Amino acid sequence: MSLVRSIATVSGFTLLSRLLGFCRDILIAGMLGAGGMADAFFVAFKFPNLFRRLFGEGAFSAAFIPLLAGDIEKRGMEAAREFAARAMSMLVLITGFLVAIIEIIMPWAMYVFAPGFAQDPEKFALAVELSRITFPYLAFISAVALMSGVLNTLHRYAAAAGAPIILNICLIAALLGLTPMTETPAHALAWGVAAAGVAQFICLVIACKRAGFAIKWQMPRVDDRVKLLGKRMIPGMIGAGVYQLNLLIDTMLASLVSDGAVSWLYYADRVQQLPLGVIGIAIGTALLPTLSRQLQGADPKTAMYSQNRGIEIALLLTLPAAVALGVMGLPVINVLFERGAFGAEETRMTGLALIVFAFGLPASVLVKVLAPGFFAREDTKTPIRIGISCMILNIVLIIALMPWFGHLGIAAATSVSVWVNAGSLGFLLHRRGDLVFDARLVRRLPRILLASVLMGAALWFAIDVFWDNDALSVMRITIMTACVIGGLMIYGLSAQLLGATNLSELKATFKRGKAPRTQ
Image 1: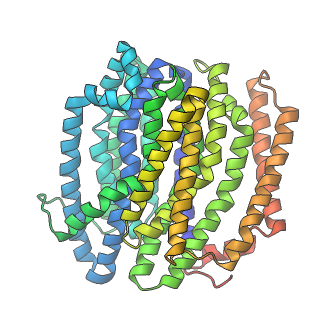
Image 2: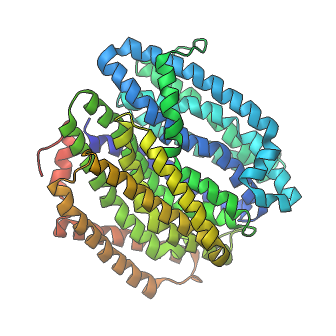
Image 3: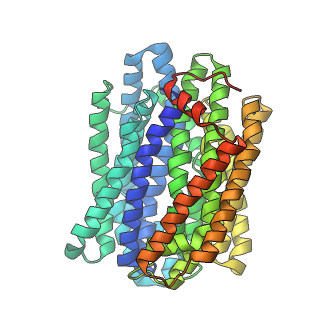
């Protein structure tokens, strides 16, 4: 399967998951709004969700997939199964112990993750209660991350990419079905998170068996391979997960800003997670096993080609998305969330945060694309150094900007720090000779940018002329739909005419199983 087809597979399932996620968030916004109850649930959700993103999209995959790919290429499938089984047993043991400890110390942990909640005892108690319900999700999703890594290494992307769909289905079902039977809608959502972990685990077990790679349980035992996995995983947790850790820091400090600030940032981030997930995570997920197996097979030229195409595809899809969100931030939030408990002020505050987040969106995607260049070469130390530096920069910028700009200062600090992260990763890869832009990428990047600017100008004009916040909901949805479709058409036509992409070449890439020679 070619890289582009692999990316398309992951993107398709991720897109479905994100769309269901929007349905989920629309329901949450209507029933919980953006006040204290919503803030408490979002913090409780971030506890296990942070680890899900670190394990599933970052540290564990970064350390596990290259080792597993090496076993498959050099030691055979049976050795790979044995390594996966030992890794699974240790992972379940460690995460189970962590869950037990955090459950006990949850009130103290909440002082760290949301210190501002301490000023409101009722809100603080609710956040602790909800977090205790959601946190066991971590143990199940860690096992899901391992099985996803196995399937991705085997180039079977569908089941792993589809697992988040189960989470959104469980949350929607819980919100609609359990709310009448629980104390608050937030409690229903928390139980939905816990149920989703079990459901995802069962589905991935079945998928691995169907792939002929059943992972048999065994007593935890540490050997040299498991020690190496742990050694590489610890720095990767910070290096690959710096974006998620930045969001966690944002949440901690946002709890000090005002009631609702956590929710404003959450809803804004959820919107930008659509292109970030569909593009960045999809490319990173497909690129890491591809690069790992190419490098294990001593094929650095093809690996370099794959890295260039990953960057090209990422920017081809991300730059227009960032421009569109920057231009239409307020109308997008208005259409998606302004109903029920989510009013005009919530729309304004969330929309402004989305505009600021949009500036950092291309960099967030590039981090996902560039990080596999290190991980595939079994280097997790460099990303951790960059990650720590960027986290420190993020905190410093938040402290400097938050007193003046509130939650927008937090969003701005995150966007700046993620650009520094992406730039540093790219610079170091280039200096090592592991990333050299080919002629095709150099030629197309400015054309992609120009096509995005042309689309942005057209969207700006359309919003200025046709948008009305006070219009009927049907009319606002119609205008937004027309803007999205029109923007896509303008960008696609501009990109084709300017030479930013080539449709016939893209179709050919889908059909080929190896990299074309076109420069």
